Image 1 (tube, rainbow, N blue to C red):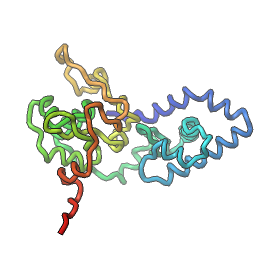
Image 2 (cartoon, one colour; image 1 turned 45 degrees about the vertical axis):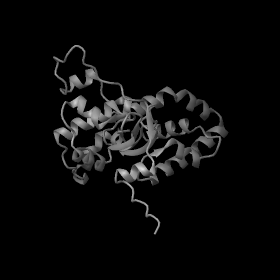
Image 3 (cartoon, rainbow, N blue to C red; image 1 turned 90 degrees about the vertical axis):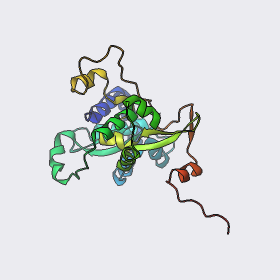
Length: 247
């Protein structure tokens, strides 16, 4: 997977540049936009994590067009050493892709994932929401709990909910951290069949009925057959300290 986040943001700005220009023609609107851009810049800069558009909107004046503000801010940073990039429904400052080599000495080397972990991560990314049994059906082999625990520890995979089927199995999905690490604005920017073949990840002699699934547009929304995780579910999964009983 490649870092296409910067290109996508530039395209996003280009699609709306007429709207931004129209605002700039009006002195009052231009002043309002400039001040809103400064405020948004401070909000994103001060955050250690990508900031959602909803969180930004809550801190800007009520009449602010957050989309126009973020597009203008992205344009301002387009040719700088750091760029403003969109990650799903969030925004963050990241080192310009052509200057990434300058940061190589400061990069923390993550533990290399095993082939099994990479396979499971790919299945979760493309098939989410997906259960452990469904992963095993796709891979044709058993998926160990250790592999799933490792992916949860990376922060790239999360527990989504429970499937409304017998046994109510847990469903898995990716996180904004997954998108951020691989430079993807959203899930639909995952590489498709042609891109995977071009990168050498797929054999040119794939079965004629083989296809790459289209991930959901919004990884936060539960599917119709999913229920949200409750505190009781989290206790059963060992993710929440059990509440003490009555003496």
